[in-house]
Figure 1: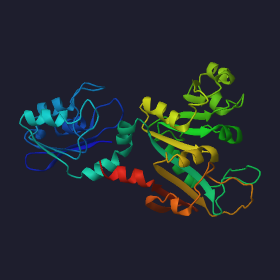
Figure 2: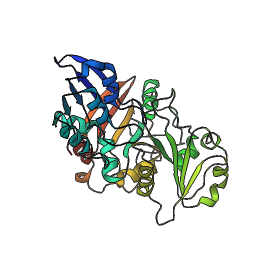
Figure 3: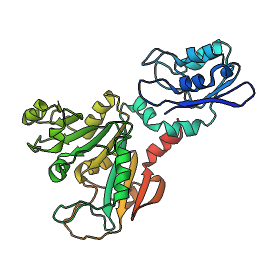
Figure 4: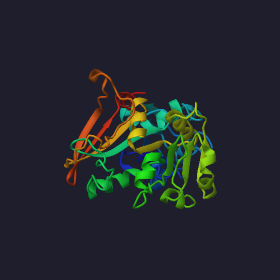
Length: 342
């Protein structure tokens, strides 16, 4: 998540740009192309250190030097191993005045998912659910369409369009037969991921029927049960009984360079994620409905927390109307701290 601004030698806005697509030109390139000759002797302000290696695109340091920029203001150094201060060093050695640290906390917060992936090898985990005022995600018969209103569902589709993957458990596939796509399509097309130790998935469902068109990954300890899914285009990842865990799934998604993943349910998978303190960011839609039922599902299964003093208290919580619902958005305390400091 990088943005850049070019000021000419008189301090006037000459160009701006942002990194629009993975594999596409970086923010600095767009900004310098807009500024053209006005960049010479001017200042480049950028939220992340300019890259200095050949990757999907040429080094941004080359573009900065060719443009004749005299001063570069960098919010934060890039911890990516192929950069890691190298871009700053190249610019300084070429005589460019480089300042680092302006609005660093804001840049770290903006790029928290990217920084977590580099640091831990795991993606930034979002958790989403919709529930009634009495904390239910379905009626006692399992019916859940629709708890939230139309505006909340629009928000969820927009959220999906920012993700690299959407995770559900076997129960959600069986109960809801979800498609798990963003409608309308967003900036990204998330991979649909199913986590099922047993491998007992429906013979017919929307995920399997569309696997050749939109990627599906199934993590399981019983891959032999899912040969039909593989034949229909899904990728089946076999894990042993002892290795079958949410952390193993997240580690594999991290190896695929997925940065943002969304857990949509159900209660078992969400509960396991919260038990493991694996969730970084929460998106909860509360509908003004009451359905009751001792057997009606609540959002989180798992082991839970025995003492109220140990409850997870979210940071940076906001409450926003969403049609007739309330959208609650917040961060896990550790994630909030990591997003605010290096």
